[in-house]
Image (cartoon, rainbow over all chains, first blue to last red; front, side, top):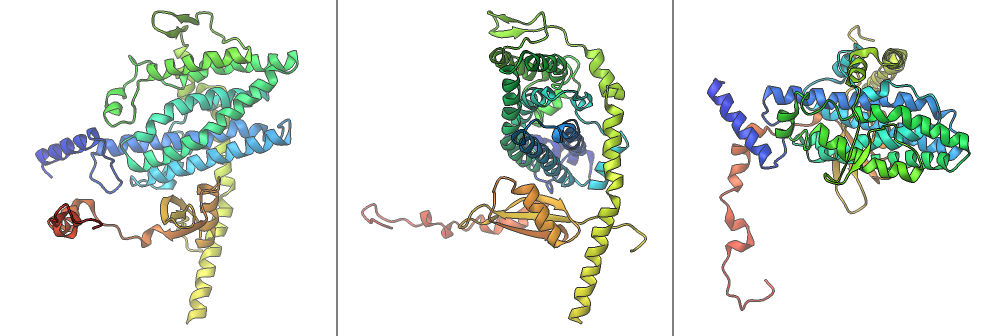
Length: 318
Length: 97
């Protein structure tokens, strides 16, 4: 294809997206679109898979059967969300094996929030409330993104996600209405998760490199700062209902803007964790790699069994 | 087993959400064989009673049309307006037609 032809195709492609038409896997797409989508969808899938680990930590120690079945169901959903997303990503022509390789070798990123430890039961509440709350704000606009398989996967994910946040908030509410120690545990958890949750929306708009292109392709509908503000504005009143204090001395309602002003985010910490120096980066990745490697014999056995069965069928037929 | 390791193949999953509706494509997954594909499809795509029936088919058995050839493929229908009821002019007095 000549350069001019590619340019024409690209123009038609951009117009198609501007008209809100979906791009499907077999449609022509610019290489950059394919690559960007493989990167974003796979990072999203990896985040769901690694996201199971901090919560898996508490399944066996949930304080009641009700809490345990809820947490189990939530973690199962995360596995499911990872699978929806991996299969959406595979339609772009990358294999599941390559995707896993990228995760296990550390080449691919996942959401940094999962590199923080879950040291008390209240963390199960704070994660559902804050981390899933932030994820929902990030994910809802993706239900209308331009790549069909991603958009369809996100519709399903968002539908299921709302229980995740509600069960987390319920845990917080129960702790806050409990003993002084329980309330203290909830406050401590909020103190630790608040700032990392704000970082989930990514760098400030001034620092964000992909925003413009992502807006065009509808991978983003609002900027990082807009989404972060939306999260803060909706979460502060929820903290008030719990009777908890958000760990930010500069947080206050701004009558003029109709929004909350908030303090400075520690971006050094953010970049440290992204670069692999968070409290649990090594442990998370190792756990994931171990699960994959220790499961190898099961995958091989299943494949061998299926081949044997198939051979038997052929023998019977002949 | 062969020396080149074989990975679990890819399957396409179709779910009928309730009787009376058609099976609709829900997504795909990897499984070693068709039994496992069905069970995995149940766990991945119907965790909240989204279905009453599941079909799985190995992805390699699906032959798909090529969007680049949509012209030749679908154009023949474009100039056949006489296949639509509105093509035929009838007086307003004619009812129930």
